[in-house]
Image 1 (cartoon, rainbow, N blue to C red):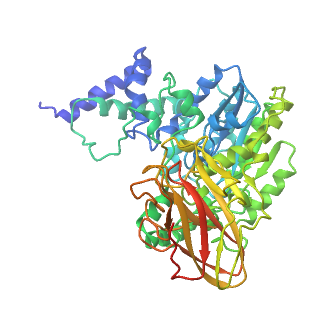
Image 2 (cartoon, rainbow, N blue to C red):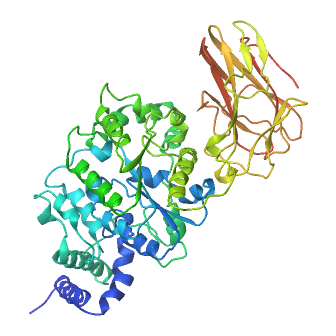
Length: 566
């Protein structure tokens, strides 16, 4: 009898799987065959869904105080443990980011008992409309796959009180208990071993695979818990790209679509809509809080902000249930409540990568807000703090909101007072340690230090802001006098009310082959620099594109034909 290669392959797989479940080879197969395929897209949607128990294993070995962040991709993209450690007055604390894309309390309750078992000092627990959203019963196949992936490798020794909060329709579909553990190992082991066999009877060429050879560069991959990369990954996983900057680069029509039909479609989905009833997710959230509180763990419930353009599209009363839940938690002795959803300091598009996820700038602001809050909790638990520590939140930027750099004329020309900015924000990321420096004698401002650092974009760039009063609806034309120290220190980006002006990829350039002052009234795209006001306060923002550049003067005029020469 002829036996096809596919049938032979099946028998080989079945035989290996039997060994995988029952024999000492299990550990080797798990490490060499299954593990890599759990993080490269072969078996599960995202490697991070099977990451939590590796993280718990790592954290269990640490004797230091621990602060863990738990939630969806909003936490995953917003919580930077390394930056928080720098902002904090506490030392010797381990910060871990356990956020998982599309996570909701109903999924998370499966591993909260394991998290509680390692006794972290503080758990930062995300609260958002997604935490209160509806889940079907039984779960959709996608949600079942996500939840079963989170159950993978769950120690059998753990108590399983979470099972009493599962809906009856979900229980037979989830990998629970000893049978579920074996089913999960067999299912994922079968897929991994079949993929590893040399027979090419199943084409996987079109399946999504991610290069995880450098785990800290790919947001979908997870380094092995034994890897030297794991501690840094646990503090701050790689981030997704900035969608807003991408759509801006495509032009106004693409950005309008992003904030138009795409946003409407996004808001129509139930994930970011609170259901308004005590549902599966909210019941699971209560269980999570009870489990942590009963384990003497401080819980900081964190309401994360959304892109202000999304918030502006909400209908009247859309998130009232979220607001009511926040009010309830503010009176709840089990938790510390910190709601940043409507915090005006996050009302800037530049603080977001897309509709919901914080950008690098937003992350930095979040860590500045969290540091003193978490330190106050750690102090009550006996963690020592550095005496006299100054938080950036206390003085996140040099500012004087009452300062007016110029009174804009209805008809005429003015020079901005460059020595009277309303805000100076230092840089971060590649611009860490950079700022704008004012020479009060000359009135010039300089990007310092001149370390040959530049980028195409404003994320992390030092910024300086000048606010101006106007009395009528007028168009103003801008001239800027730049002094470049060299061809790599000659450009800035300009913005209005914290929104970057479309002046081309390189902003405003000034190098003409030598070090000399140059007046510019156009951007890199040769478009005139102008803005309109409606008779209110208008703030001009300047970001460093190439460090070392000097700004000697800025002129604002209603005369479109004005010509200035250095």
